[in-house]
Image: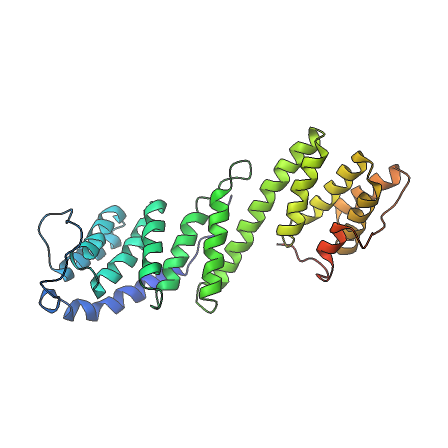
Length: 291
């Protein structure tokens, strides 16, 4: 699938760096409790000054040495836990992992940041990086869509918890793409069942598209395929309803023309049964707006 590049990450990174400068000037070794728990053992030997670790990480980040930068930022969390250094290091570690394509690590550290610091201004950004890490791993519709579902869940959480964040608009776009991808998978399986004359299995898949993903671009075809499947089973009433709902919402659609022609060949025409599950699924929704 094609991935739209987000431009909202770079400004946030610049803000993080600028915000960290006063911290680098004042929160040095002398201001951190020397008796505090140092956390996990360092991966780079003896403890180093926090500002040195931070600046070394930034220098590597600016040179696109993301793995090396991540090691430095991770050290801040290990050597200076429960400090401002640790918090910023965790977020920049998430960003470094994301930029370096280590999405599993970015997801883990991003989730940890949100769990530890949910009330900070950068929590929405950490959640956004988690969602983008899943999003960038979305495969084509012929493969398992677990990552699509997780991308949808992560972006939905962002919109639920931080609806006015600067990432909300982009998150809405990602939600729409992920939903379309999940609907596309259902359509792929449904078409296969239809070809195999497993009409009940096909109907169940197309039903999921109508019920769960009604705002995606796949809903037109799903209604036409339902017309096909119900006609093949001899359930003419439901076939008529599927075609009628399709015609009401998408009168110019080529899928409606196909559904109408199929019904005519069977000596009937579209007619909506208000008691049908198809009619109920669309009742009150008005016209459907595609992706």
